[in-house]
Image (tube, rainbow, N blue to C red):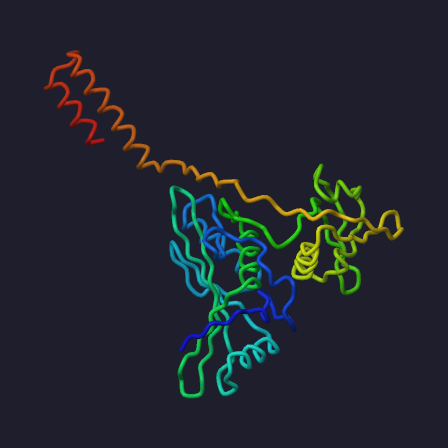
Length: 302
């Protein structure tokens, strides 16, 4: 039994109590699904994704040369809420899975992610609920990006503002503040005269506890032509008004990985080159056909 759940109530690594502005697509890929591209063959990419699953304490359930399935554990509260949302209190605790399908396209690995939650009901039937929606896809794009994936060419970013600075996180009580470490010339933060060392505390009136909170803020800021940023400079609270801007469409193609030839392939290539040279000598009349055949036999026996 399978149903579809638009997981506004589910965050990738946990659950939130209500829909938030992070429930807007951060990256919209040409295919319309959570998808990234990697430099490298599928088997290598499966290894990278497996390593990332282990890093975040997920369990690798199965892997092959072009597919990986990981289980993300649920704590008691998450399992209880998941059970309620799936509509059956007389069941086993739900389990949460993510699948990554990897395909080789001209030396570049294309990865698409899917996810679901399943439980076994009282009479043994399996009930499965597929994940969908912005929260799920934003989480999957972040996860694959952390493993080395890049957005496909043509990906757009229409729902969250671009401010144009790099930062380090500073934990202050229950919230995170952003210490600016780099400013991109000509982008909104630079135009508004923010400086390296400034500590951003609010964006569009919103504080942030984690990545979801930051996405909430940048989505809120996208609703108006300008928005306010609150920050601290040299211990003094300050404010600046930034102009709304969006990330440009992604145009950076991933370069196919170049693998070093195996000794066997290198040897085959060497033999082929020698045969071509011998054939040219025969065609030019430098060696006879008998000499060519003798040298050919010798090369192929090596």
